Length: 215
Length: 238
Image 1 (tube, rainbow over the protein chains, first blue to last red):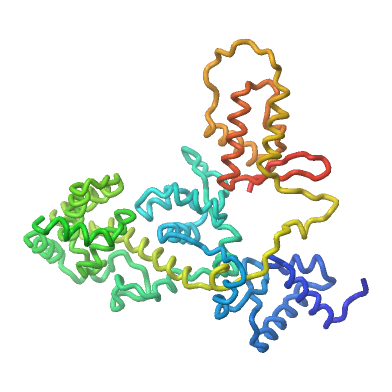
Image 2: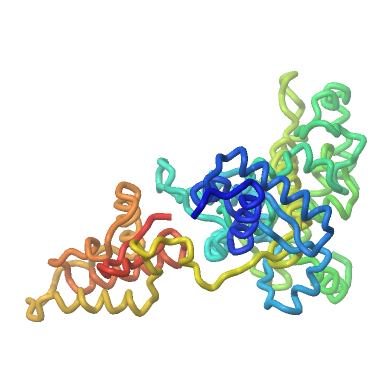
């Protein structure tokens, strides 16, 4: 094999992306083509821009620590006519459990159950089988419980670059939540806002409650 | 409760509460109360009413619901006491804190679902042959159940046929065995199939080890591969 020109290098990387069935990390590309990481990264950005300008049926996605060619969401219905989709059939409870693990990892079962307030053994088992979470090891506390983390597959499925790509708690709060009144403390996740406790005389707290008991 | 049983039945059929937290959130929403200022007496009453209803419908009330009922009642009683110290926390913090955390996780879960999900909104190439990337020299294949059973049968054949009557007490359970194997794997990272079977063990010990291996594969704790040339089956800790 002769040393490829820069144009050829781009074509080669495109070819690699075309055949890969999992996101290709830059390191993996580097082990195949004679180019350094920076050159590869530049080429990948150029390819991404090219696909974008082409306004075609697919785009280049940075996901799970690598790069992958994916179909555009607007054509999902058509793709589904061709391939047997393997949809993520998850109950709300399973999704919540997965979210808790994603945010709190590494996490043990009792911590998950503490947040959900309900037994989660069955759901953890299911998430393990779906390979969305895995066992990292065992915690050095009595009972040596298993420690869970999310997998690369989790990142792939939800299109996340890495775990830092998850919205931060601050960003989550910006999302619609009818239970959290907007006017109250939009910038932090307070337990019971300090100034409220200060402003409200203690006896008011009690008398308000007395009212409720009477009704 | 004065309502018609049918009426209540209909209402609650729509609301399936996964746990006490879900029920609590439902009550807070329904009664339009401020989560930072929960009228604890009202919510506790409604909560207990619901538990009563579940009991009357012969629904098995899970222990989790009762724990929450106890917590709520405890907070309610604390609220009635005059506050002794200035810096004393609002007793409701005990319930507000987990509720907020749970709500936060619920929003995060919704947010995750809004993403372009692979296999639902977006698709990638998928190959049947998983072994493309592997070098031919050192190829391994993922072992199916039948190869595993063959290997197990070969091991069983090695047990001496004549054995004295076994009156020893029952050995380790599958659960104990999994823990034992986890210890080995944690240290070694990987182990061959044969290594796990002590030639001097009894048949039942063999069976327990084998069941433990199967269970660990099912739980995605280990993966099993077989070397193409040597035929050695190896277990990898994931």
